[in-house]
Image (cartoon, rainbow, N blue to C red; front, side):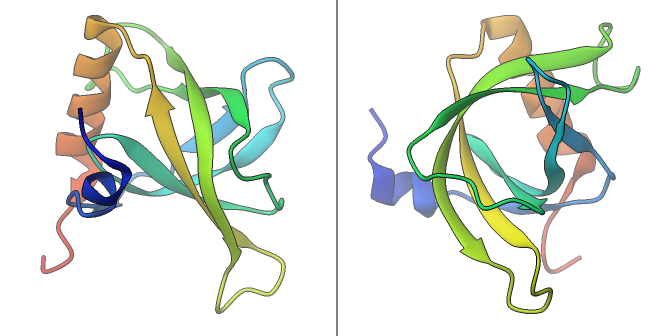
Length: 120
């Protein structure tokens, strides 16, 4: 089992693809992926999201990472803070929960294909 402090130390990668995250139930925009780790994503959002709430989220996929058009997952809001540079924007840390083996493989392809190390 990975502790919360270990999860925070996992390598994050800047996300290089403009990917929307929507509420899977309403299809309303929640935000855009800005970085990705092995266990979650950070999004930029126009909304203040409540910490510890779990949302059913959806991201549309491209054919180079999956043979299906979208990925739906439960995401637990781990933290939410106002963006330092954009006054009406929030940075939100989301832990991706309970992915099937197939969906985790897709998530890892997203990490590998669209994630870029900070030093690049």
